[in-house]
Length: 77
Image: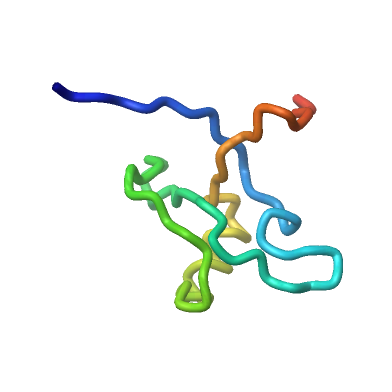
């Protein structure tokens, strides 16, 4: 039997990956958007092994997405 999970995503922000003191938040689940605009299905986890050059480029281009916490307020612009 196949099972599927649907989750709402939002564009990541710096607070998702570091606390107010700049300490990395390891283990954060995120997804990457590829160059043709498709969000990859493979989940990624922010870790000491995350390839930071690629990550920073994708982040700067708003191509990193994190799951929406059901308790957080989302402001639609």
